[in-house]
Length: 405
Image 1 (cartoon, rainbow, N blue to C red):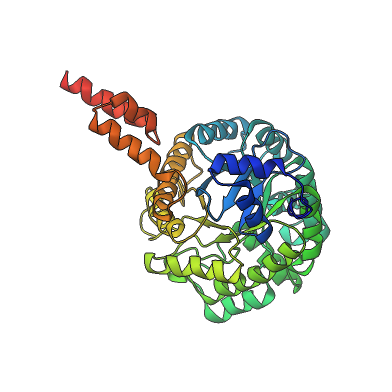
Image 2: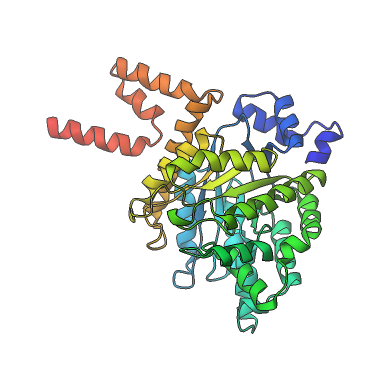
């Protein structure tokens, strides 16, 4: 896409993003070329609506779905997909690790009108074990890249790839010590492989190979934070910052190759460190879009981590983060239910919108002004129409009317 814009082509995806965001096509095109906006849409996927993520644009929300070995039912995940879409998610990620992975991904791609992301190394690890390997250490670099290419050809719009985990970063964590070590699943797969084989991360060492696949398919690389902190005690430590430095270098190389990237950010960060984390990413990674999980601002609220995440997400996005991954009430406890998915999307959308008001994003205040007018006029139907979650608002309102009557 970057090369098409540079060649002076009128790119339909740019026009559609500009119209949806209320900004000019020239602004979108300029920021895509600069790497400050990414447009998620694989060239092989007709169904997907192109989505802009980054500077000057509305803060976006992602919902994770996916099976596990103990809950492998694809039908349930499709119900979660529909719940996420109904609640207003901007993207979904299929993180399945159980059941027929390729079939599940195909169904998600055929059903979802919004961009779909994956973590390809999950499938590589599962395929390796099912293929007779003793464990994830038996996968090869070729296996990893073959999976990425396969998913790109299928139409996946963005992939999380943990390219910034290096032997040097692992050594820093080892010397420093961590409360929770490596909590990222994909990151732990690679760290285990690297430690076993005493070799460098193939996604880092063969990064040009990855860039070639991404450029061929307009695949957005979401450069993963495999060394993200999994608890407040590990926030903003040497391993996390070393990885971010590596991602900054890889971002520069991606932009030079005409490949769109975004940077994934930490999951557990105390409130007073959130703005610092956002500013570091923007400074080190050429203002590439920042995609954060939460961040969760405390570790002691199991069952309410959608709330701890929304607090951190609103602060992070108001400081410049561009993309919030939802957290559900089930975080750290179990796989989310359909209702958990709905609640997670709604709460994260509230955080995103609150940040957009702070950032002065085009059109953000109009909805709040409309709500104010409806409240002034006692226009209850108008209030329901403008609410982020009309169904819940209506249920509470009608319940109160029933009690009064």
